Length: 198
Image 1 (cartoon, one colour):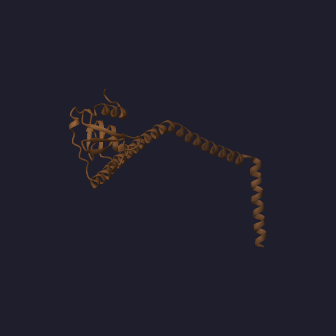
Image 2 (cartoon, rainbow, N blue to C red):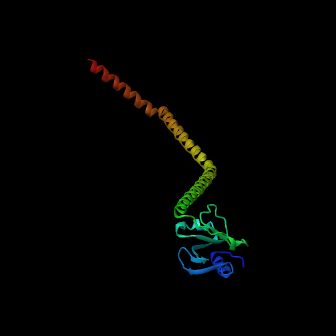
Image 3 (tube, one colour):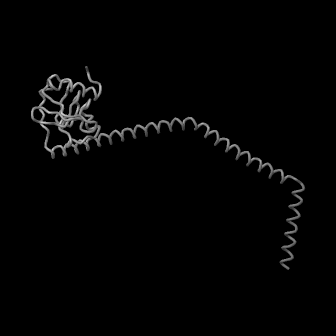
């Protein structure tokens, strides 16, 4: 059987544990998954399909002694790791680091993981910003002709209004009744000026 998930890793280990010199002392639903014994030593164990999942799940290495997995892709290597896909896994030395070393390694791993997450978030934000800019440019390209036509229409409307005003003004000036009315206003204004001077 080739494991495809964490539960199948547990099954494989349980099938091979006794032959490899291990005894399963207890199993639980929470973290860590189990306690195993090899010789006189007992180890708190966390099973993972990939060892890197230990950090993805944000487990605390202070509370665990050993990671048992199918694929060892852990770049931190703070805890001992048994990789079941390696035929020589029963010979894997198990030397858990001291408490202080686990803490330092844990926070280093958390910091590196946060840095990776930040870079991914920044990359995603930049990609979304680029996509938004592209969408905006395409939208502007589509609506720009309509904006230009609208502006042309407004200019034509203003020009037409101006021409109508000029035409009306011209018509009023050439109307005899208007000319006579203006002459009377001029005469009246002249008479008032003379009277005021006397």
